[in-house]
Image (cartoon, rainbow, N blue to C red; front, top):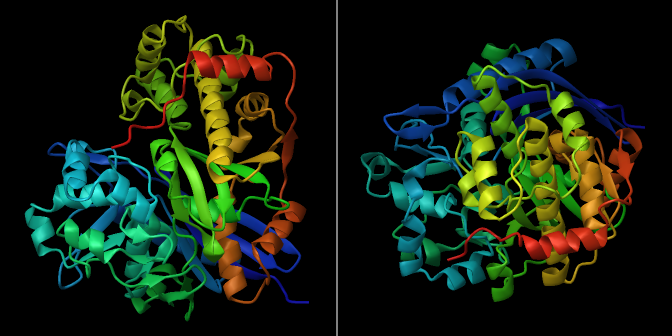
Length: 497
């Protein structure tokens, strides 16, 4: 039997980064957090940026910590959020900190893009949903800037970190598929779209697949971290949702998933994209997954709503523990307060409780008056959006669902998981919370030969090694109540072009 070996997953999220060490073997999978660090956006001269140098410093600190506690790993894999990128000049130097997808620079840009490539045509080629912050819109927004004029290469965030670690540039395909510049059928860049928008097809480096080698840690990195070389860097599902879907402990293929964090990604796993006009109007996206799969999903605003409420109450000097808020919310009758969780008014940071109250007024319903009622509104509104997305995904793809898997941080939210089971009228299996890191580790381990097999085999290992909790639909607010709530407050997909 193969002895478990050590791998390191770098998992960068919108609010924090983690470096986790995993021991992986044919029948074993354990993971421990080596280092966690804050990912704090910074606004400078009116533009919201990622502090990517601080993130890279956190990665180096994490690799050093992982080496001390778990020894030198076989390889390292990096996953992060989608769409954002860094621009490099001809010497390979970074041309300023990457711009945050929540920055307002893309306002009005989608209309300019659709004037050159109509929205229906863009979707038929790329299968990617309309979102103002998509990479294609960010590139067009930046096209007239001095930075862009000097740029010779664009690297998505996980590819940028990988490049700094190894000195080798590449573009991992699961994240590339989110740019709205890639053809999901061929798995290649759409040079026709790039040319139509005046973008240099050579801007992005060559594509690579999960499991392929991305280089080895450079001498400077080894010296900085104390690791002994050679240490491989392995391409994984570098879009964190791609890794999280690998980390779904499903049995068979009749499942929906909710990757629940700052955003909620709700969808099904398919063998081929759905490129119909009806799918476009429903604003579903076709992102590539590991092993040639397609993540057919809809973005839902997610726990951002709750996180922003808690930050607002903290700023007012009235902090609330999450446990207390959820206890208070559980005492509020279901479906009393509802908002459209996909309303763009919730996208920006700020006074989220006031915006939720205003949305309730606009919907003609009662307005939450306490933090517990506000949190109940968030939970019920998210569950209603999940229900709509799961039903729409089945209808549009023809892919039936028997169970919903909730992975990521939201798997710890018992009220949200139970309410999701009630809303969807389906069992919910919650866990693992570290699905993205586990999926990252499993792809590395398979590439190194520590485990073998298909996604089904990797998921079997998850089911036998990770703690999971099952929620059954219950009485109270039943299926009919949720259906009537959906009729009363339709959950609109984000606007389409």
